Length: 166
Image (cartoon, rainbow, N blue to C red; front, side, top):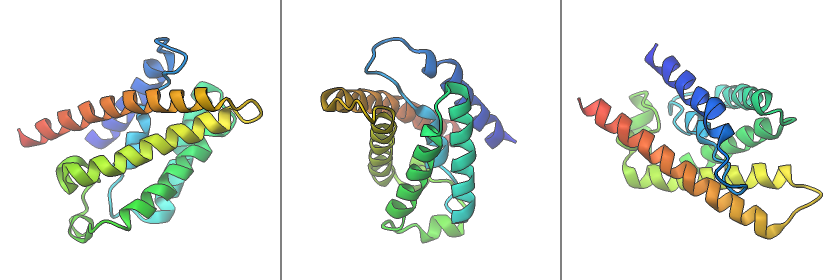
């Protein structure tokens, strides 16, 4: 039940707060992708794809983007599977753990999240600007949004780490 409330809270933060930040034209953080990044390690690949499709479709519904988040979430999950295959996670999979900094270690988690967040943002901004690609704006928006998203994700992970120790 607490996992469901966590998912609802993160998605609500995205839809109600982060989608409406008007700090800069270059700052469009997507923090809800932490839900896909931290999926349990034992989840079957087909379920990961279905979850990514559903979450992306829901995100597209709230921001009126025709399939951009759906395809980006599918891209993220496929990239996640590829990266996780390079890591030794047999014990974590056997123990049915989520992919979090507390379960796999800060360094491997940070490495994975950094790559996934950057490429997710690059993907959505690239797809969203096809036909009028401005390389400078694409890179600046990707970097700024990724840095902001990574900061929020780090805070969320720190909060969950400190909460799990209590």
